[in-house]
Length: 175
Image 1 (cartoon, one colour):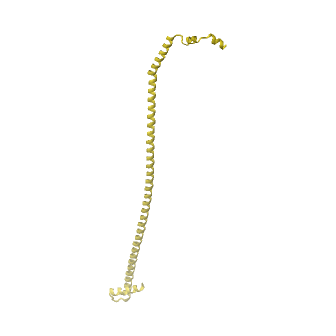
Image 2: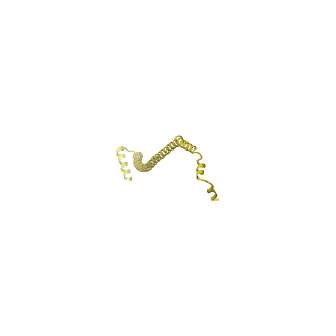
Image 3: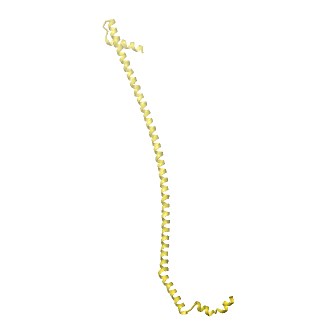
């Protein structure tokens, strides 16, 4: 069967069937070239320009994002350093405040103790003074009572100074 086909078909006929008319073929080729030129000028070149612009825009966005990322990283490091510094400062302020509070506490306690000692000393002095005053008052009362009693007993005239001296000697002997 293959033979049948090859014997009946001529190569010139195949070319005639593929290219029926040379002028039509040339017109088709020229129309295709014109169509390709027009498509290239009106479609492909604008498309390439748009793609270049798109690539450039994407590249700018990537560069901008990288810059922003770098800046954000730097700001984050700065913020972390500031936070660390703030924590250290806060810690030192707190420890200084504790130390100052302790010092004030000790100073207040020392001052209070000194004040208590001073008040106790004043109270002792006042008590001693009052005791002495009471002893003097009692001595005077005894002297006056003794003088009155002696005056009644003796009913003689004795000078007050002499009598007072006798009574003071007597009281001194009692102490």
